[in-house]
Length: 268
Image (cartoon, rainbow, N blue to C red; front, side, top):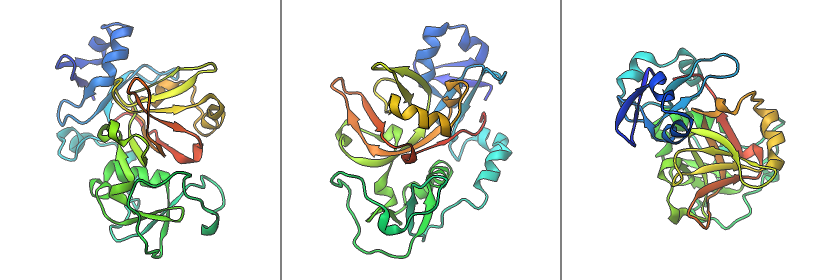
């Protein structure tokens, strides 16, 4: 996108004007951007070390967005080809990234009491990787709201009960297990020493994903970034329990990289 709308001051910015605000203002304002056409959540990405220009983008734009209709990247059209999950399909989540599929009996449900309603029947299922689930959450609005069955280990739930978009999480959801997904506005190191990696979805009141130092080796091996700025504009799906800090900060701690998927398609 050539311009983005900042919800803090209700002003339109092109990249040059936005960067002239200064580093401190950019770091704050970048978490409050939307597409000026559809008001879908947007992001700002600084100039990359590989020479990629700074830009604005939104992922995904709302279906009614005129920008989307004019400019959707061909690479994303290819991604969607054959990726839509049929509405009548029963799904089993495949957490085994890049490896041999494990027998169903070897899968274990998360070690916590379910706060979500489970379904007793166990119909035939189709295994789906996290990357496929994430692309459907991003580009197929009906999927996230569907009542089709999805298996997490031995537990069967409804898709609409399992997944939670970042901007729909509330403090009341603390302690609940979901597949949390949404847009990353920026990433930075912080917290204890050695520092954790924080993937932020907005301001302090919004959800963040925390990758502890001991997980960062696996994280960087799977997604070998030269610059964490590449995470600005990424869409993420993570399975975990929502935690709330003493200051009211919502976050999900990544304990297993296999519970995380990142969609890093280019500028949109």
